[in-house]
Length: 127
Image 1 (cartoon, rainbow, N blue to C red):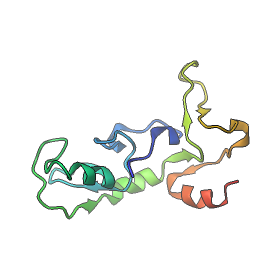
Image 2: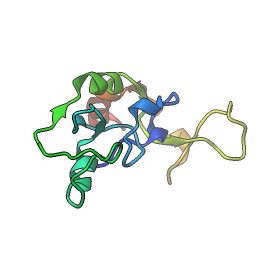
Image 3: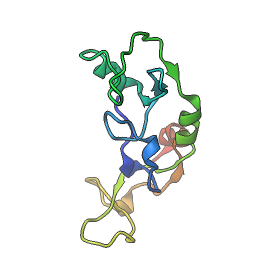
Image 4: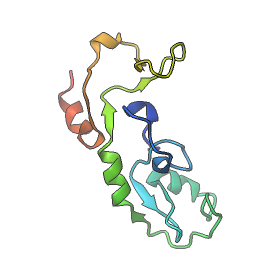
């Protein structure tokens, strides 16, 4: 699965936490080359099916024993997220509150906000 959509997050995401392949927030981040570049596990796996080089610096990736990037994962797991994905309404200025994207009226949806790492547990009991 590709990275997390930025609309899921309450605050603006630092560009360093975005996957250079899918441009979403890193999901299951791994380091795949000697330079320490991080990618979503899924994204780099798909990339390496057709190319054996790092997408950022074109260095050869010979060893497929990737290292999990637990530090980055910990940072991402502590970011605040909405229970339901949000987007900014293009008709309002940037300081407007996000508008919910979904088929159900926003008033009927869960308003929970919490850390990404606790989202799966919340979703088990979410109405």
